[in-house]
Amino acid sequence: MFLKCFQLKPVLLVGGMSLAIGSSMVAQAAPEQASSPVTHTNTPSQRIASIYQALPSGVSPYYGSLLTSIYRQHHQQPLWTDEAAIHSFEQQLSEVALSGVQPQFARWLSVLSRSDLSGDARDVVLSDALLGYLQFVNTAPAKGETWFYGPNGFRLTAPSSALVGRWLQAVNHGTTQHFIEGLMPQHPQYRPMQKALVVLLADNKPWPKVDLTHTIRPGDSDPAVPQLRQLLVRAGWLSEAQAQSSIPATPQPEQSQSTQPQTVAAPSQQRMLSPTPASTNAAPASTGPAEDIYSDAMVSAVKRFQHWQGLTDDGIIGYKTREWLNITPHQRATLLALNMQRLRLLPDDMHNGIMVNIANYSLNYYVDGKTILSSRVIVGRPERKTPLMRSALNSVVLNPTWTVPNTLIREDLVPKLRKDPSYLAKHNFTLYSGWGADATTVNPSSVNWQTVSASAFPYRVMQAPGPQNSLGRYKFNMPSSDAIYLHDTPNHGLFQQDIRAISSGCVRVNKASQLAGLLLKDVGWDQSRISATLDSRTTRPISIRHRIPVNLYYLTAWVSEDGQAQFRTDIYNYDQLARSGWSAISNAEKFLL
Image 1: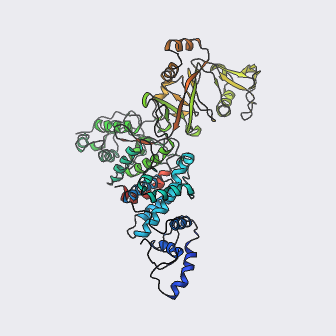
Image 2: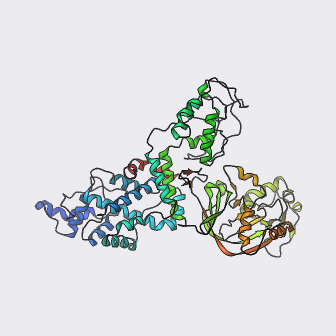
Image 3: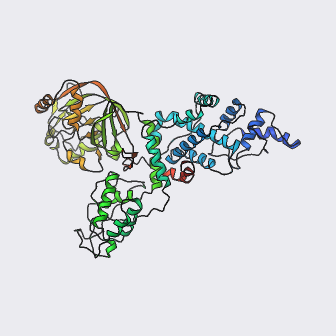
């Protein structure tokens, strides 16, 4: 028999939600208890009340009223009799708790990890946690962009009766495990990330820290180098033998040309990973103890680390490299867990279409499940973020014109014109009297730019096709309420930077010419025809036969094809939720390791 008799007593609440169940049931049961000891529960209310009294002191359900109804419908019988289903759910609950999207998940996990929780009480807590998880999973596709990329995460509410009904149907049919496993992210990255998460959590040894406030360059001597050597060995980028051989027999001549330590400005707000660039002023090199020399062997190890981390692999230890070196495996685990939940926003299988990972500055074009083009991209800077969005390419424009958006007119163009009224002519812009079809051209030199309002700018500004055009020679149109699209650029040298969040929101594509060739091939345009049109400098929009799905997404952690977990700098400061997951690490280890 699931229900047992317990002495009824008021129970404190978990999670701060006011519940209207325990007190009334206690009130109903109190007279009976006062008259005589109870050896059997007789009424449904008493039986359900006894379920809650099985909980450890200080613990009560978050969804008390709903649980009361559910257990009544199930005749006060246990809902969790399948151990495989329990294991699967505890694993998923651990992952979402580590992500930091909602503190209540960590509280449920904490209760489930208690040694004094068993039997009826464990059944209740599992059911309570599942109700919150059901609502989370069901609503994530619609609201996940706010939850996973905002400061506040997910707000708990009750799941729909239809969702609860599906769960209870699975319980009644003995298919609970199948139902629970269906709640996992279905993206192909999920399983590899799950394995990587276990590896990171299992790494419990102390993590050294490199204490630096300045940049170290190859050949420099610095007291922090021994810490760096220790960390590189701990992280597996340098073997013990290599660490020993990395210490020169005698101090070697310094290679750096600078004379003062380089101070790196702290970020404006505390971040787990900050894209704040270091100053380019080099630190001075000075002779010192041999173990303080940043030698070639260590430089090579740092370069391997930087390459893996998506940073410029120059061996220079600046702000970004130092920050990433100091991130522990457990901190990386919470980052990975957060990105595992972000998979819920992605298509389960991108068979055909274009995927742009904003945080990785990368574009991949898939046809029939195969990658036919990979390219570096440039995305919006933090104050003009590239938005997460799903759309579809519908045309390619050769030799595009560029009409300057109002935001850029207000914030960029007007200040430049006040300093240099000839700016428009220098960059091949035409000024029009308005936005209508009957607008006439205006001579920029006839305008007193000091008196023109930036907020009520009366003109339209358009840049003609050509080598200076900000969109380059190709524009890829897709419906967007934010006027976001893919395009070429006249400055391809910028693609060599490791941090490429420098645009005003649109996505610049390094291999724009190859992408255009692939898209236009399907509508009968070969390369010679494309080249002839480009040479004419005539703007030519070309509709493509099939709409090509485009997904602009943001993952700062994933697993590459070689099985290695990859991490990228959080350029938009979206990963702060992962900090909230740190408190769940010790309890998550009990269910994931």
